[in-house]
Image (cartoon, rainbow, N blue to C red):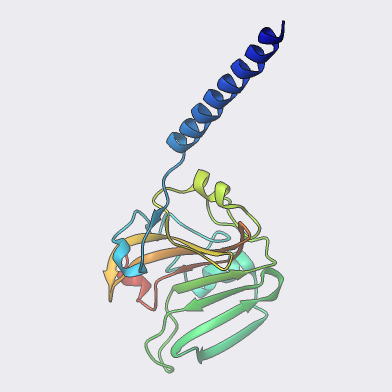
Length: 198
């Protein structure tokens, strides 16, 4: 009798172990791998294209009129600043900044060069990812994720585009996660003219 009671738990432990290993293997097969790189510049080109990615329906290169039609009038407008002559629009209700490319303070503003979204915000990417979403949600939504690893509970994840300029591949979608939740994300050209992107 005692032998029977010992064998049953042993078999259950073995079966449970096999099931967990099989599930881990299936999850690893189903999800893309996050490639760890030491420097963002070593990551190489990626699949991101400006016409295929958006935040809140806004794409890299969109005009000011297009952005107004989607989000309405900005809360504030800043001419230049941040080391560039770009025009920066801030939308308080979305806690988002949109920057328009410009080569000098006297030139007319070009297309969207950067969209930065901070917590709290309800804006989402075209893959329905936004503030508060988890790393596992990102893994389900995107391929070719890159990361420099975790430091002090902060994880940076990004996806590169195919156009290289000064070591950066554009456009670039960058997420910052703290405690496995997105707290900030950005779609950017890294100061490059959006008209030159594929």
